[in-house]
Length: 109
Image (cartoon, rainbow, N blue to C red):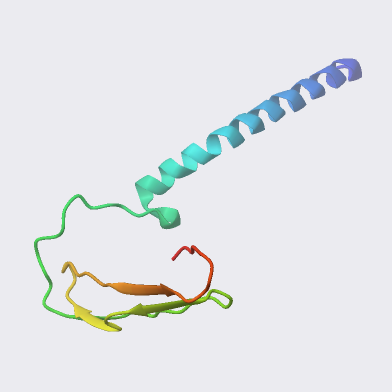
């Protein structure tokens, strides 16, 4: 192959590689989401349609910690700090929040 032909082919390869990389970067997010959904990798959780019928006979001790970031003038408390539940058991926990400041404020938990 002559040097002139070789010089014409190299830019074509570069353009081909560029568009292949562009296509892969465009497709990477949906492909990664599909991979995570199928494998459960990356923190993707699966949602159950119903509560399990079987309740295992051992307890799990759960402790609820309530704290507030510095500069956020709130009182944030839980009604019960500890609860013993069995796997599969449905339980409700109530929290009380009081704004101690003079202004309306919002936060995310």
